[in-house]
Length: 411
Image (cartoon, rainbow, N blue to C red):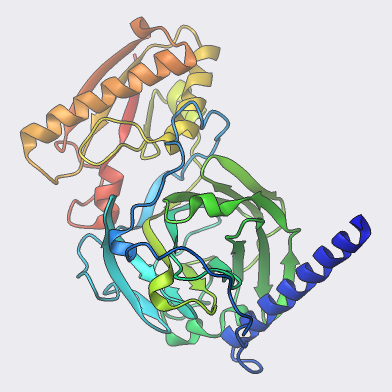
């Protein structure tokens, strides 16, 4: 009986792989469109409200402690940031391109604005800058699923990096013909047997295909914010989902034209438009490899945008742990080093409120280093500058993101 079960699982995997290949061929204009399954779904309870009103049960909130193994550190300089704050609700973001419908929406219980991606639609960001050889990419995603009836196969979704080869990165050509150019993407299975794998292609040739990595039961993250972090160092590709490192592949990336575009795609299924969707927000691309040790110990100053806080608050987000962990290790190793921690904000809000907020955020970082990494508080001073010492242009999203930073000065 066990052999029969294993054989059935193998055949199911083969069918899923073939279905993904057909879907990718359809994206590139090859062959006939994939046909959805006509099997009858099993009955399910009455549906929940639509996405904008949905507020399902939440997994336990992540903490800095739960992210103790998270070692992602973002790049030094932010070159692209997108949170859709300036975009009109109900419209596709002004600088983006899409092969189908896309809408900026707000979601009850989730902060900010989100791009809602629909099935069988491809999305290109508004970035126009080269990422360089070494860079990081971060974004938040929500896989929305509120079916009226259950039983159909869930659609896979993809997130990718693309080089436009000197052409406009948002050109219509890249909505259908990504594999002709330097292109690396991750395919996610969001189901109860969740998985992910990495592909690289160039000149319509597959240059790399990873093993399929198990993600466990991803249904517990339906309708929840999940943070994705990517780090590229030349040919090396690493991916974290929340605090878990899923991939660390030495030669996944092609050598050649540097990447300058992000793309997203949700495959097709038998579910209706109001039952399923992919929400994306808080995108950030940062170039360069931060050398915390050299800058702090040798040069005496280190600044980072990698310590994140809740909006208008001094609560540190758990994905900040990679930077805090590195700093804690350095201070443990160099016990004679004393630091001044300085908080900075962007220009949103009043001058007085920003100054006070920056001081509170510096205090929060001090408390985290002392509590979680055993750094003596006597070695740490704090200050806040509010919006008075900008590192970027507060008139741009990228500049604002660069200004929301924490600075460490060796005393």
